[in-house]
Length: 104
Image (tube, rainbow, N blue to C red; front, side):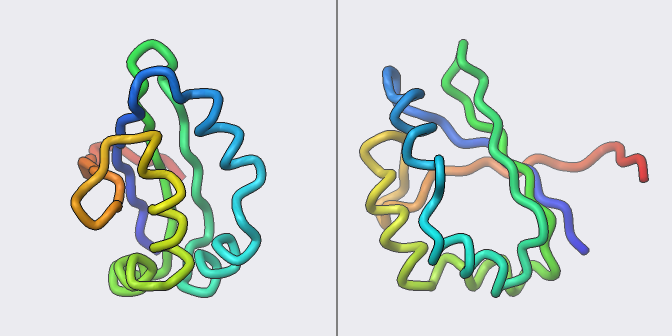
């Protein structure tokens, strides 16, 4: 299993809307995440900075990367792009974090 951590950034004023759109996330997106080996996925918000911290556990890097090419993921990105800093393809701009400690 691979543990991934990364940060994203909301645009100012969209915290409540970001939370609303995730509660619940689309069932087809949840199914796709599970289909591609995501076992655990959480997103946390720093309400003072609009920074989102994401943590995911997944079966493989290849499966994780394939999610971005699914139709439902691309629709989700289009749905969320007005709330956050994104790349030209509407994907959220992310910065990967390096794991420095883990306790089982």
